[in-house]
Image (cartoon, rainbow, N blue to C red; front, top):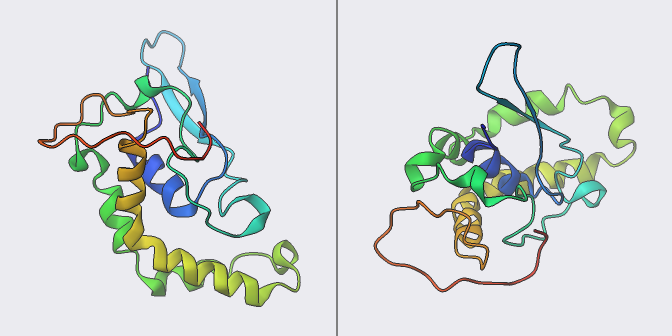
Length: 157
């Protein structure tokens, strides 16, 4: 069974998905392999709060077995590098496509949110590392030399 990919985990950490990752698994008739479709991004940016209260277990899938394929930082490529190098010039044209009715008179807040999102590009690796080192130990096949002490601080999961 396919599970939430490392790229989606990186996205959820970047955008501070405040809800556990939701996935619909499906397969075509006569196929044995399942496909994962990642659904419900409504809790990005801490839902309607437009803030980033990071916690190791926030925005992750509820079962560790979906992370069994993660063996290290290479498992997060090319997504992690794309987030870290996401050009600011690519974000603002996307913002122009958001209907004004969606953010109402909060244009200044939207600007602050997107500026913060750009600032967070460099934090995604640390956020993933916090999840890795949590008491949940989500990456059983991570190949590293030094093992960190699990952290059990806050967040959902």
